Length: 131
Image (cartoon, rainbow, N blue to C red; front, side, top):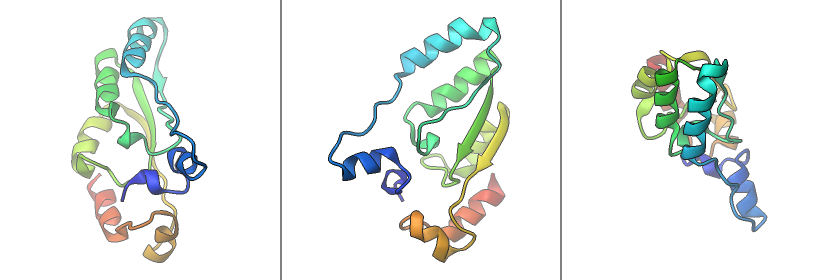
């Protein structure tokens, strides 16, 4: 499932309204923030994209920056682990994670699928165990 089809996604809501999706911070800006702030007390980042942060195209680079500058990552994800899968995301996130939260929309397939259209609940459960 594409997370951008979730009713919680601002991009989805913007499309419904006929507006363009919200802008995202450029990776160069994020790199500059890390380089300028890491030596001045930056201890933790909370990537809030108003949607699933793991679909942000530069999320892997942000995690690399956390490793490089010894900055902790406080992350909330919907647990679908797009592109890399649960195990690969865990290998990247866990060493720098200060707090990792999985936010689900239901305790079973029927309730989860009301929000997460075309979601495979059993795969999510397996991914949770893997992570």
